Length: 389
Image 1 (cartoon, rainbow, N blue to C red):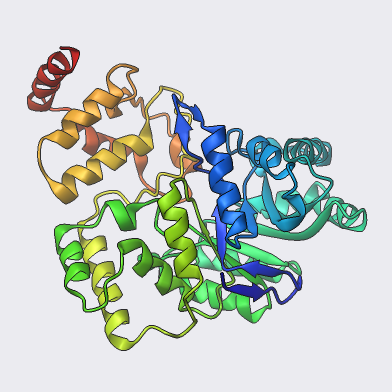
Image 2 (image 1 turned 30 degrees about the vertical axis):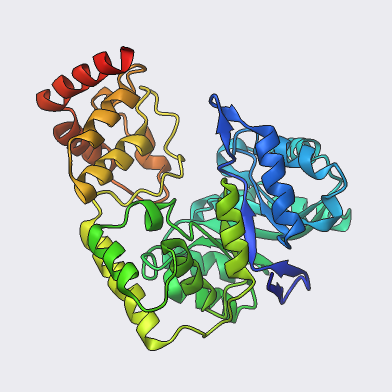
């Protein structure tokens, strides 16, 4: 495992971080034993940075329970507060105390404001968050302070300039090089000596599962044999300004693959041909994708029950790969609980929460028109009868 020393904190962190948003599940619940095995495997192979959040369902509790078995001092925990849950400093204090209890720890190594906008940051300051952070730092309960961000570059720079941040977390991957904060924002924060953590390195799995046939062939034909995940991760670690790449690993084989890559990479090691390949993958992907959704789930719950990320995932599958089975499986997944796109009543709640600024209501109309046709409903009924036999 390769490590980087954080400029401001002095911590030596594994360049591969463990994202705790997407633990393995069984029967709709977090599979604790499998999660425990995976987390311990990662720690024993050198991963020492674990990222969770107050709003990730049961994530903090599960991580705390696992680490309490002799692993807490071997890792750095990063967790986040959230503006929607905080109306005053008392709320923030209650949430923080609850997080300490969930994580079964006396301190948080990296405490972040979650998905902050410029307006959020101004509101946080007005309610006294800086005093709260200062006080908890002095008490040793918060070691370092940062924020995660999904907004535009202009507002990002304003927030970065307004406080002496220890670190920030941004969405970044080879198709987002010029999206949201992008490369310019990454380098700007680095110039301020701020640590850089990367989320969505595989774009919610899109850079593995949503590649077109053309992209897959480009990868297969390239002289150096690497998986789509390895190409995406190596592209990130090629940038010397990136400190930690946080991967939402929930399969043993993915953990071991990512650890192997993180033990082998060096900054500025990709040659011109390798960089050219990734450029082709980037252009191919952005030309084909229908909805630029990462499946983060921030748009949920929908007041009317629509499973928005699932709808967009099947829509992208249909656009990228064709065939009738994607719409049929979409109907099988959404019809029983009426979570299909046509249940949308255009209240707009989802669009106000989407960090990607997707025009969700319009795109759900597109899902409805493409996947909920009479033809696919007829095929779904046939498939349903066959599966019942």
